[in-house]
Amino acid sequence: MSLSFRKCRKPILIALLLCLTLLTGTGIGYFTNHVWSEDGRFRSFTRKVFQKEVSGSLLSLHYSLAHPEKENIDRPAPTLGTVTSDMTDTYQLCRDYISKLKSFSYSELSRENRLTLDMLLLCFDTQLSLEGQELLEEMLSPSLGIQAQLPVLLAEYAFYEDQDISDYLNLLTSIEPYFDSILQFEEEKAAAGLFMSDKTLERILEQCRAFIQNPESNYMLEVFSEKLKDYGKFSPEDQKELEEQHKNILLNKVIPAYQKLMSGLESLKGSGASSRGLAHFPGGQEYYEYLLKSQVGAYTSVEQIRQRLTAQLEEDLRTIQLMLKEQPSLLRKLTDGTDLSSISPQNTLELLSRSIQKDFPALGETDYEVRYVHESMEDYLSPAFYLTPPLDTGSPNVIYINRASSGSNLELFTTLAHEGFPGHLYQTVYFASCRPDDIRYLFSSGGYVEGWATYIESYAYQYAADLMNDSAAADLTRLAWLNRSVNLCLYSLMDIGIHYQGWTQAVTERLLNSMGITDASAAAEIYQYIVETPANYLKYYWGYLNFLDLKNEKETTLGDDFNLKEFHRQILEIGPVQFPVLEKYMNPD
Image (cartoon, rainbow, N blue to C red; front, side, top):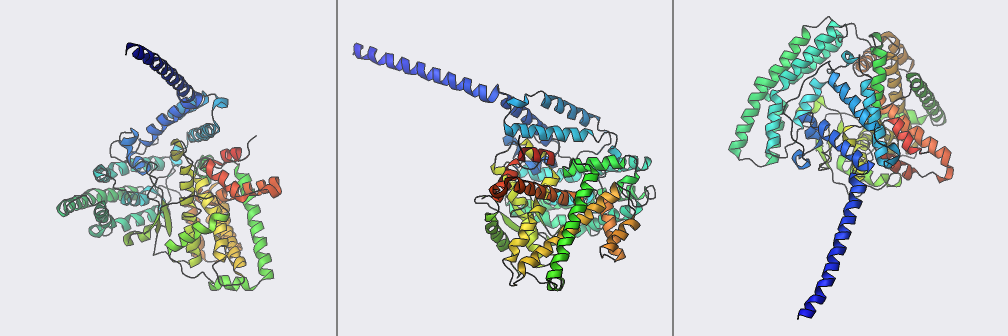
């Protein structure tokens, strides 16, 4: 027995020593590869930046993470914060970030981390270029301003747990101090001679009036009630109590906050110049260049952008002229409204998800749903939009349809491609499947996101042709796409003309007249919209042209070896970045 026991002990001891050695080696390998490595240190840094930036605003945090506590992120105070022209702390933080980013050994980082570093450096450097031009920023505008977007953001505020309902109600009570800070900012703009025109002011006031017009039947009341029902965790008595509390806050906090904002803005009436672009303000051209970088992701000179747009406009017009010369009946069909048969949005998305498989990489099973914009919100929202899910859940993927928007079946088909497959929903889900660093979700590029969705519209028009009962369907849908391309290009050129070259409304109308747009009221509305939304059209169209030019470059370089699906895969895996970064990683040395 004792002999047997002694024989057993030695193998066990050896086994334990081997396990200890193995565990020690594994631990050293782990720390070498993940903690002590440059990649490990870089990821630790981006994690800290993510946690700091995402928790800076409860509204931003909620739309980024459904359950922040699971990510060890504390919820900030349930307020909307304040707006200020003093960005000293922001600039210092950007400098600190840049300094830290430059301290990493670039050659020791993985390709993915080098890409993230390049993107962040460009982002923070661009933010610093705003210094001295802060008062040219504008929080308010009739369509894209915060006073128009805030009710929608709050109405769509999802309830994942009880705390979200409490946070939502507290956010409503913080609207007044938030608007007070915006008014103070607008007063600073007025004192500096940078306040909006009376025409823009009146359009903003009109939008505010529409929101507060019938407070007892405000759409936020009904939306809140429906969200509580869907949440399904309250008794009828508790839900009624919450609805009463919500109504009380809306009537006594939210509506008065809008009234106070309107009164303050009206007091500034007459302090702005006539409706005009940024070029007419001191530092306006430099600020416009900043917008092109920060919103569009474009770092090409304005003149080069203008030249590229002009070349595309001329090319598209020549193609249209040639097509109509060869097939005069196309114009009649297009103007007569030759259209697709009616297809439900759900069936359209299912059809698109199949049609794209020949040109775009497989996505796998994707859950999504179609919802309809609440009737009371139809006047405030676009024909359709995709609501990005929180990154910690990846769901729900929801496309909203606005039933009040009139348009052809072909327009709805291509709009759903823009929002769904292979547009925003597809691009978002595909990029998430690549498991990017969380920081990538916070620092994106509007030009990539909207440019991609515009770029894929040209394919959607091709897919639509397969569904039309017309021998000239392919040419007809191509003509429809070219017409859309010309419009977007024209508006983008006008954006540069108005905001960088100082075009007046009269100059803009002459250009529109030369393109056949002779309705004076329509021309005035186009001019006014572009004045109020600088660089907005370029997010869509300059973004589209960057993808188009990248594709043409690859086709020329690779010839018969070019693979369209592989080209799209590379773009999707790189994800939303500024265009210089995209080009760098699409064309590695």
